[in-house]
Image (cartoon, helix red, strand yellow):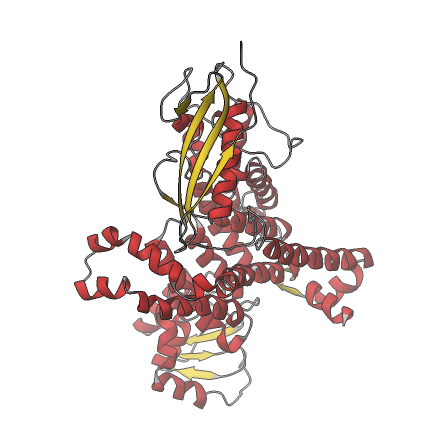
Length: 156
Length: 382
């Protein structure tokens, strides 16, 4: 079967196509493994259990009149733990392990602030959301940073 | 060079291991989709809470259609495992799992990525011609079975991806001083000390596992294990050891961390490292002998990779195994060797191949002899 298969069934284009497909998959996979060393999101880089880093964040809504209201308090019919349920972000004030690394975790937190700011139309008082993040990279000393969502348009 | 590369990619090889992996991949897909389906049954989808599309242009379905698609994915996974319209079912499963994975960055996990790679390569390989309802239906209709071999490139690519998973994981730890130095594992264990103390472990073991110095060595052992699996799989001399260690590695991870389908999938994918040829080992059995009949039954039930041809031996003849290189082994070493080549018993039987008696028997039988023509044809060919 094999000789016949190779000579009569396999046209040149199939041989070249197969070669290109295999080389492309290998190259893309190696590229994605390399990308994992600098990207916050490490898709297909297979960096398992990368860090023992931990983090927590005080997330507040900053209102038009300047109040800073913790998101643990429901607002305008919204609850943070219902709006943000995934990637270990549900209870940000509790110190958590950063499962896929600190950079990845904080990138998700940053995106979550933006998403909540954009997807809470009944909220007419919040100007932006702000997270004061304390993070511990492995056994390094803690570091702090502040993240903010974009400014929202508020009534009045 | 290119010609040799093309020959390798196009070389017809048995698709048996991929067929078995196809069967095993269905449950992995169902486990992967279960949280999404569970949320959907409560009327919730990814759209109801924080998610982050990769691209604005990525098409998003209305909620009811999305839920329907998830259920279609689950049904396709079942059909894929059963081998019913196997190619279409596998392609559908791959497409739906891929669509769902790329809906949001929050859906991404390493185990889902590995599952997607496996499904993609199963979809391009003609692995539905064996171990499938499709092949059973063909037989019932009196049609000739389809050719069970096909160009090997999907198998080689999956081997590359399998090794890449271990290699990438090991390399990322090797180049990270905190990981290689033991800080990461030590901190993880110390933080989980309460869980550790809940296990039935003696105090000295808990003290050892939470000792900083222990992790200085243990971390290096973990990193080198991953790298040795990645490399060891490529050479025949080290392949069985690499597979054996990889099974232990996955079971250890499963016991100590929540990794969704990764352990199950990781162990299942190890099947693809079997030499892709079938029925190239001969087991000669005296079918009047109860012990031989029991071994035939075990081989008939557990030889999922179709390694063996069973042939009747003369009455009173000892149990005999002829390996693919002509090595002849008899008696208990032959049983040990046979069990070491069956997927379900391999992990337990492989260490017995290191026993002096088994090694002596294999050495003594390695004088190559031609495989005799079967006296009455195969009796357990499936």
